[in-house]
Image 1 (spheres, rainbow, N blue to C red):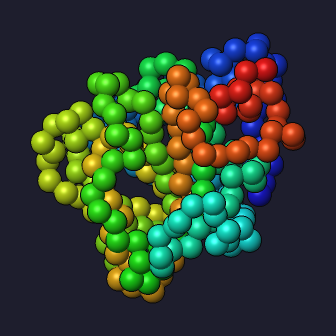
Image 2: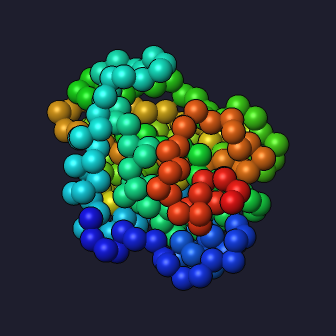
Length: 241
């Protein structure tokens, strides 16, 4: 991965807003139209958001960390990669556009809570319609995201969403999303959605990330190895310094 993968190195003032600035996030890191779509529909696709020279290194990390050694059952027919302690993956999950979108929806302190790699194989990936977060307080508490490492479409099992259901609205019909490698899908975890079946033979690798409101810190499953993580990055992961 190129030197562009490095987070900013300007002085940090020890605060959460300062950590966002240190990571490169600005008020214009996400556009007004994307913010409006995220609020209205409960999801947004950030097109070509991942630097193109990050794709191959992230794919290599994915393939090197695929494992079946998980502490809980996983769905059959899907490969999972244990990428959570790779610094390049974490940096991809802390892109300014992601941080800006999460800040816009959360409107309070939040933290990067977890990440894994996922690849539904042929005939795999079919899910029931569900929510990733069961509570609706009227304010976004959890955001799920997918960094596309491969193109996503209806053939290889792309995500289906029901726009508007993140606010307990009836929804405006089901939509199977599509995107190119390098796009990033973010969705309010209360939005109804599901993975569709991979009816082809192509891979559908993604980096699946989760952000949570800071009051939910400690409720996730990820056990970070923080021994080589900078204080600014630890702050974005919810750990006070």
